[in-house]
Image (cartoon, rainbow, N blue to C red; front, side, top):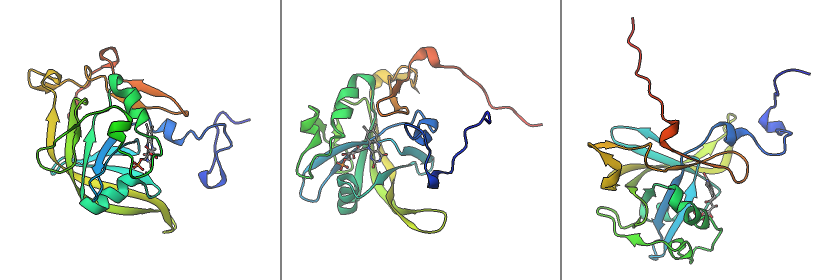
Length: 207
Ligand SMILES: Cc1cc2nc3c(=O)[nH]c(=O)nc-3n(C[C@H](O)[C@H](O)[C@H](O)COP(=O)(O)O)c2cc1C
C-alpha cells in the first residue's frame, strides 16, 4: 500500500468526511450581513471566503446554491462582512440556520444591527471589525470542462472599515489579540487565533 492516499474528486474521496476544505484550512469566515429589497435583514457565515486585492480592497465568498445572501446582494448590490470571534462563536453558528427569507438572523442569534456609514446594510454591533462592501461582481462558477456549477462567487469592494480601537495597538491591527475564529475540517471543528501561535518571518531579499 502506498504512503500516499490519492483520489480524484470526481470519483469520490472514499473517506468518512471530505478532506478538501479541511486541508484548505483553517479558513477565515465571511460573516455576511445583507438586507433584502423588502428591508428584512439577513446574516450568515460563509467560509469559502477570502480577500483578493489591495487597491481597491476586494473580498469574496461563494454561495453553494442560491441562498438568501446571494439574492439580497443581487437585489441591493451591498453587503457587510463582520469578524467572527470566539465570544461570538455561538451567535455565528446560530446565524447559519437554514431559516426562511422572512427570518432576521440578527434576531435569531440575539445580535444587534448597527447602522453602517456608507451602505444601507447594518454591521453586527457586537463584532469588533466590519467591512462595508459594494458588490463588484457575481460570477457563476464553472468546472474545468466549462460546465456550470450551482455555486456563485460574490465579490465586493470594501468601501468602509470599522475597527474596535482596542484592536489597534500603536496603530497596528492586533491579529493575535483578535480571538478570530476559523473553520477547520470535520463537521464541527474551529480554531481560534491566539498570541501563542504567532511567529514572524521577514521576506528574503534577492540576490
Ligand atoms: C462556519 C460556516 C461556514 C459556512 N460556509 C458556507 C459557504 O462558504 N458557502 C455556503 O454556501 N454556505 C456556507 N455555510 C452554510 C450557510 O451559512 C447556510 O446555508 C446559511 O443558512 C445560508 O444563509 P442565507 O440563506 O441566509 O444566506 C456555512 C456555515 C457555517 C456554520
